[in-house]
Length: 332
Length: 66
Image 1 (tube, rainbow over the protein chains, first blue to last red):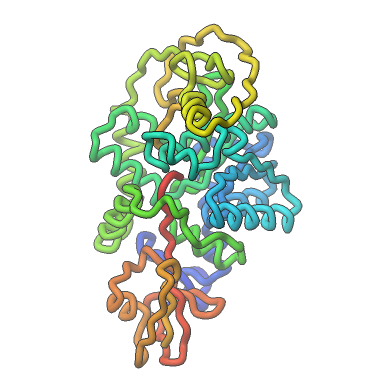
Image 2 (cartoon, chains in turn red, blue; image 1 turned 90 degrees about the horizontal axis):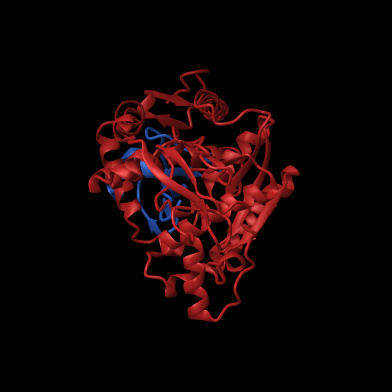
C-alpha cells in the first residue's frame, strides 16, 4: 500500500478517509487535524494558558505533544489515582514526557483531595468505580486550573470516546447528557473553567499510531478497574459497525453535534451556586465531590480535607444550556 | 511467526506466511482495534508477514472513566 500523499510505503490505512499515509505524512495529517479542530471550534488561542490533563496514556500525551510542538502555552496535570502499579507507571511516563520536553507538570493526588485513593473510594461508595473516579478527576481538573490560573482545560477524549458516550446516552435517551455532549464545555460560572476536547475527530487507532510513530512512551496497559466497563462494550459495537461501514463513527458523532444536539439543548433555568464546603460550583448546598469525600472520611477515618473559603455564597442564576456544575457531571 | 497479543498477556506461534488482514481475520481481531507492529514499524492490512517475523498486536481501546 502506498502513501496517498508522497507515494512512499504506507504504514497506516485510514479507511474512513479512503487514504493511507507514510509515517511522516501521517504525523503531519494528525497535527493538522488537531490544530484545525482547535481553530474551527474556537477552543483556545495562543494567548490562552491551557492545562492539559494527562493520564500517561496515548491520547492525552499525543495531545500535549502536538500542542507543545505547535507552541501553545501549556502545562500538564497528572491526577494520581493511587491505583497500584498502574498509577505508578502512568505517573512515571508523564514525568518523563514532561522532563524530556522541559514542560511543567502539576501532580495532584486523589488521596489528598478526597481522603483516600481510588481503590479505597471504590469500597465506600455505591457509585460504580469509573463514576467516582470521573467525578474526582473532573473536580480536580477544574480546581487545579483555577488554583494555578489556567483559563482552559484540554482533555484527550477521542472520537471513539465521544461516539461511545453518545451511543450510551442515546440508548438511555438521556436528554440531559445528550444536551451536554460537546467538544467545548463553556465556562458558565466564574468558578468553572472551560473544558475542550481537541482530539474528538481522531480515532483511538489514529492517536495510538501517532504516539507510536512519534516515539511517545505511553502506558499501553489499561486501568484494572476499566475491565468490563460499559463504555468498552459500546466501543466494540461501534468498531463492528465501523468495520462494515468505514466512517460511521465520525458520521454518528459529527452529525449529532451539528444537526441533533440543538434539539436537545433546552435552555433550562439552573441555580448554580458555590458549594458551602469547598467553594466549587454545585446545584445544591454541598457539591457531589464533597459528599463523596464525606463518605470516604466516615468509612476510613481520614481527616477532613482543608476547605476553601467560599468566595461568594450567593447563588448565580443563569441560563445554562450545555453545562451543569463541573463537579456533578457524571458523563464525560 | 510469533504473535504477541499485548494486554492479553499471551503469545501464539503460527506456521506459514500470510497477509496482515488474513492474520487478523484468523484471530477474530477487528483492524480498527489494534496497531500491527513489526519491530519499529506499523504494518498495513496488505503487508505480508513471514514465518520468522515477530508481530505485536497492540490494542488501542481505552476504557472506563475518561
